[in-house]
Image (cartoon, rainbow, N blue to C red; front, side):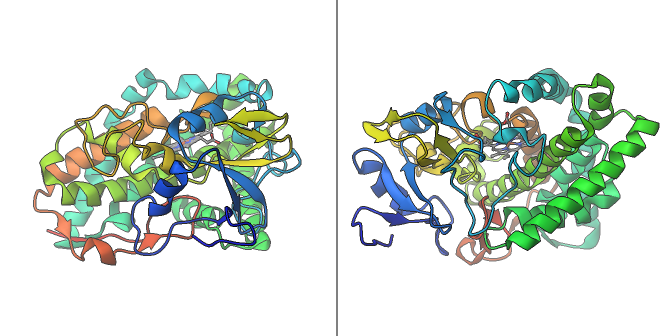
Amino acid sequence: MTTSADANMVTFPLRRPGQPFPPEEYARLRERKGLVRSTLPTGHVVWLVTRHEEVRAVLTDPRISSNPMHPGFPRAARTGGVPGQDEVPGWFVALDPPEHGRFRKTLIPEFTVRRVREMRPAVEEVVDRLIDAMLAAGNSADLVEDFALPVPSLVISSLLGVPNVDRDFFEAKTRVLVTLSSTDEQREKATKEILRYLGRLITIKERRPGDDLISRLLATGTFSRQELSGVGMLLLIAGHETTANNIALGAVTLMENPQWIGDERAVEELLRYHSIADLVAFRVAVEDVEIGGQLIKAGEGIVPLIAAANHDGEAFGCPAHFDPGRSARHHVAFGYGVHQCLGQNLVRIEMEIAYRKLFERIPTLRLARPEEELPFKYNGVLFGLHALPVTW
Ligand code: HEM
């Protein structure tokens, strides 16, 4: 933690190499009274929210907005961060009610527990195919490249109707958008390329609708073409990089805690434990509001730290202990309130199937390098692993 002219000010983000799990600083910040003043690399001064109860309060307060068009909205990266509604119509995670509800209402039926259950055979098929390929290639693999990334990537592209062969394209563009050090030019180019790509795909689906989400959304007529491209982009991006990081980190934790392999409760605890989307739920106050005894003035930025909330000892006993036996369901790994993750039911079945099949079919799976030497991601809005060398 670095102190500046203001002794209480912390610089941010706080993750450091050598800290695979939520930074120790979070525990100290949680103990401070009120909220914590912090400067982002962008120069924005924000309020950091670290306690579980207060993170939930921020994420449900109608006086606090997700819309980057409001003055004072904080940005994660030195440059723009992931795009917002201002740049991409249909990027509804950056909209407030009531506009946000139009998107959410149309999409919810596609991600219910029932709908997602129907996707199980397709997810199982993808997982089996990837394990077949790993086994055929020998007795070692990069579990990120060969498994954790392609599982959600293939699943979300099939769901949307994006050809699987275009995986490399959208994965590469997504990487630019979620990397904190990408420049404005790189972000703008990646955004335009994805939108152009989806625009072409929508034209194809207009002529020849398929059994996919984009075709179904087109048929509803609810969204303009531009909005539909934005919705497609949000689902494509949110749908693979997030889950990939959680699958990879979770595989490490299960290999280190083999007594929990095969226990379905592990999924919920892995979501809490790793809290990979620590830096995604940025907000701004649009009216004066008090959170945790702190007055936040209209126009001040707020960063609810999801990993800090999920490791708050008041909400989860012995939070640093990986314990699938606990009840972790109240974690905020998927956010909270109206923007709570749309894909969470899908994530749960992807993780459950991925681990079940992986450890059943490769029971001797183990790390090829000690955990401390793994290439963790410290330069992104999402925490994860660049690679995961394994052997069996
Ligand atoms: C481990 C995997 C995932 C994690 C940890 C995660 C986390 C999150 C979080 C924290 C939010 C709230 C953002 C905010 O409040 O500003 C969110 C929203 C969202 N997520 Fe996920 N996500 C995951 C996977 C997915 C998948 C697979 C999909 C798509 C199928 C998806 C689609 C979305 C969408 C569309 C939103 C915006 C919802 C709204 O604004 O109404 N996510 N996610």
